[in-house]
Length: 455
Image 1 (spheres, helix red, strand yellow):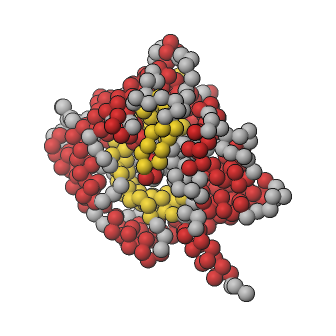
Image 2 (cartoon, one colour; image 1 turned 30 degrees about the vertical axis):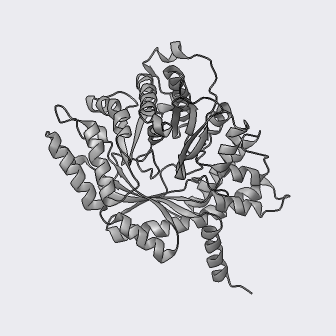
Image 3 (cartoon, one colour; image 1 turned 180 degrees about the vertical axis):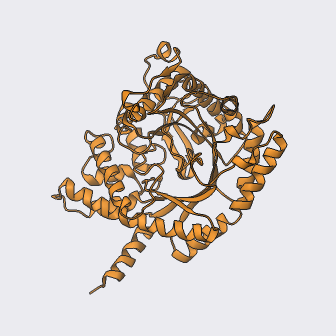
């Protein structure tokens, strides 16, 4: 009879080899506040030198751990201080040039992405915030490895509709400047409500103002592992048993991620930050959050019951993961990116998953409207309305929500945007033809809800 230790080893091997378990990202969180100067050239120099100094061994040490433990580490990334503050002491700071410097540093240290070309503007903008926001389209079109995020709402401050209107314009322009790649630039840009400062996942990662000088955050993923475990259950197993099974698997996944994260942090000589428990899918067959819904008994993602299934999944992942680590953070839950999940792609292409159903699901998932392709001629006011709706869900429910939406130039409903790799492909979704321009063009701020006064 097989011993418990042997059984656990074989189970872990199967998770990796058969069910796509991986460390989705190891992300170095790095403060660049000490790079600020009143001389723009000095800022660029300081930023490049600090990133290279701290991250020079990130790729090599992570690759070494992959070999030693035989577990894939898919992405090596860096998250920096929100970049809008870096140029505020300078007279005429060039944020596009800063993006190019960051891109050069990313390539030098061999990381996939640097996140943090960001601004936190839920209550209002400084001159640096607005300069960065206006530079985003050009910055993302001229770089390969930069990701941008803008926090436009929070449960404490409300929703900044003036910035949302601006971001609708920025998203549209970013997509247009990368039209030859189906608007790929917009896939590296996200609007947030209640953005966490320790999130290791792109495009929203940045190093929050309360974070240490440097830390190592880990994002671990395993929707295929969860799906396989649920599929092995009897059809008569009730939903309590399903939830308990997911909790047990989440515990094992988190334990693996914690081990790799702490080992890498030790080798880099920096603190271990958090482990993000999120189930992040890929376009590979069998590595799908939508596949978990089918294993639970739904005919497809989008069927009635999908929101309830997602709520249970999200909760069970958190309950299992929190028992395996004292330092859980980031987003932690289940991602539902349309282009990055084979089951979601299929559901959207067949009309099972509508835009409205996706919005309902975001009330219980860990992010929001993620990697959704829409017609390129969608108006700025409709995009602003979409962002405002999603921010409202986050604000009222005191949770993180986000919008990463791509108005694909020259494409319409029925077409497909193709990105390849982890970004996959996205059927162009119908957003309807009703207008919201008079509402969103009022601007101003939607006040924070009454529960914001909870001191």
